[in-house]
Image 1 (cartoon, rainbow, N blue to C red):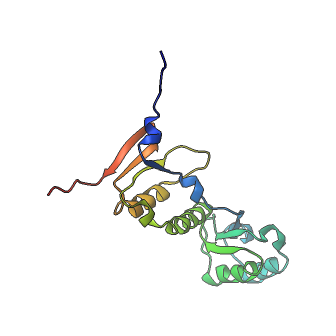
Image 2: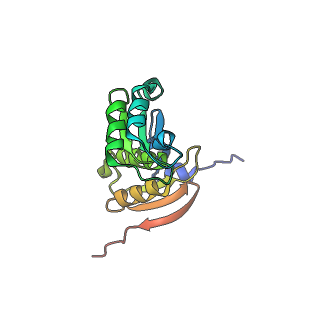
Image 3: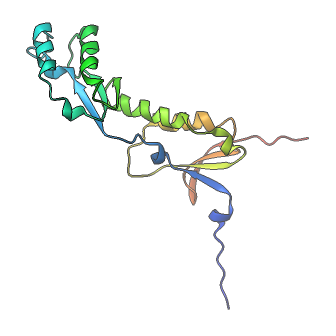
Length: 172
């Protein structure tokens, strides 16, 4: 007796979308203003300017850099601008915010490049597990982008999904 197994998942026409494919690529660095504060509280202009002049910029070369201040201190706007003028010539790109904000911003930029029309009337599973930390920001963005065009959105793996959205069937 010949046994024949059918891979129903493969035949279902479900498209798996792995958000890890859109995870920001490239080296990321953080320029933290707290490292330049006097007593962890005050930014002294003269000292800050001198520190920037002596800054080893090679640690930021060709990286995507977030400028932030992780200390609870008041930083004048000109200080962020001054840091940017030193960093911009050597970095790949530059943003204001912490590392999480930077990753989310780059993630959204990558997801914006998806042509939603390619998913017209398709059944899509947004992969739920992986090696990289995918934030809720990315899951909400992909749902927002795909919902108007897809037949359905599911979360998880094709063999085990959680239904998220199903287009209503039009009756004639």
